[in-house]
Every structure is written in structure tokens, then in C-alpha cells.
Image (cartoon, rainbow over all chains, first blue to last red; front, side):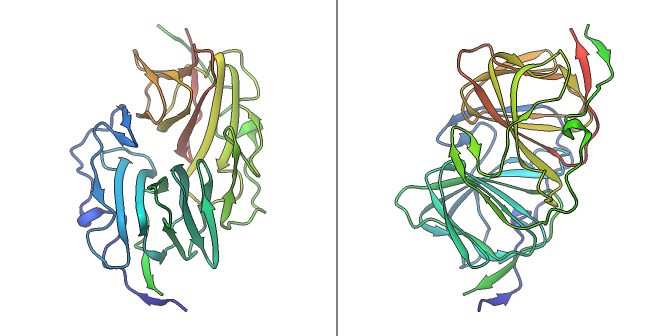
Length: 155
Length: 155
């Protein structure tokens, strides 16, 4: 069984920073610059520390610019041999594969995800995303804007 | 100026039906069957009536299966020469183009959307999506699960 430990950092807020309240809530067009990069959207770390994940880039499209949505939209890219944390939390995930392919573990089940495959991960389901392939695995992950901290598990 | 009239049907709930509370909130994998069709996801009308829109298919991935997310994920496809309602509402839209190309009007500004272009439409911004091109225009539209009824405008 997986050994549980408290998450040191939430995936909600990178570096514990909240979106600036000074940013206005206005219509924005995020032009795709190619290869899943967008104007006004910067590259971030998946989390700022932790040894249980590797090789992940994070791009927050909706959630860091003062939007009032009840959800955030993030793009993640897991490079070859990378993986996200093995974790669980009360909030749900919706994951849409848009680039390459990868593997999603939910509970004890592993499935390969290809272009446009979509998974709804229900509350308190142990899950992990990984990329055992050569090419990068890119996906959107949509979450509630208000959400609990993940509990990171160790195999 | 646009002439306003009350919306007869909300885009929230097709035919006024709410998702069945009997459906369980469990993890689901929506396999992409190709051409932006998914297993367990049916084709629906964009709205069940109204003359101000045309040629739109609607596929609800997240929102109709008992999920507890604070958001819904829908895929829409506007066929050649089709358009959505010209409308506004308090809730926000996040639109991600994934197939073909189309045009998004926000306020007085029109922009062409291609693959992965993403737009955040802020509250009470008049907007419309249309497809003046030959090929279908497909996009995800993410909205809050609890949202107000659109007000449909007529040019």
C-alpha cells in the first residue's frame, strides 16, 4: 500500500502565492504561439519542491489573471519518463490529453491516454499521470478554483 | 445597437432538465472515438429552439453525469455558416479552439480562432461564435456549473 505523507505544497498556488487582486477581470485572448505555448502565459514549475514528481512544465491559462471563474484551466506537459505526484484530494480533476500520449492511474487502474481522451477523476481517488513514452505528454487539467491541498502518497 | 429580448432557454440545462441526481459521482474515462466524439457522450442540440443560432452540435463531457465539479465542460461544433446566439450573461466563458477555425466576437472586437487559441470572456460581455469557413469549427467551452441564464440579443 502507498505510504501517505502531508503535502508540503498545494498544487493550488505555486509558491503559496495567490493571484494578485489588482488584476482586472477582463476579456483576454490567449493566442496560441505553437507547440502549446500561449501569449501572456509563462512556464512554471509543476510544484516548487518535492522528489516524488519529475519533468513537468505547467502553464496556467485561466486562474492567475484575476478571473472570477469557479475553475482554473492549466496545461501540463510531462516529458519522457516524467510523472506527477501520486496523490489524492477532495477536489476533482478533469484531464484532456492534447499532445502525445501518456498514462493515467486512477485507483488501481492504468489507462493510456491519447489525443482528446478525457478523464474525470472523482473526489478522493488516488491518481497519477506519467509519461513512459519518448515524446512529451501534454494535457489540460481543469480544477475548481477553491480546492483542498493534495495529500501526496509514496509507493 | 442590439435589441435585447429575454432568453427562452438557458444554455445551462437543455430542455430545462437538470442532471439526474441518481447518477453516481465516480471516475470515468471518456475515450475519444475520433473526430471529437467520445464514448458515453451523445450529440445534443445547442439549444432546443430559437432562430438566432444555427448549425451547432453540442456534446457535454462533464456536467451531465452526476459530477460534483464547480464547472462543466462542453464541446461545440459550428458547421459552415453557423453561429451561436449573440448573448451576454454574468457567468464567464472559457473557449478553446480544437478543430478548424472560427470567429469570436467579444464586445465590438472580432478575432479569428485557430487550434488552441483560447479566450476568456468576462462577465456581461456581449459575445458570439461563428463559422464563416468551409470546415467545421470545434471548441471546448468551460462554464461554472451554477450560472445565470443568457440574455439573447438581436442585431
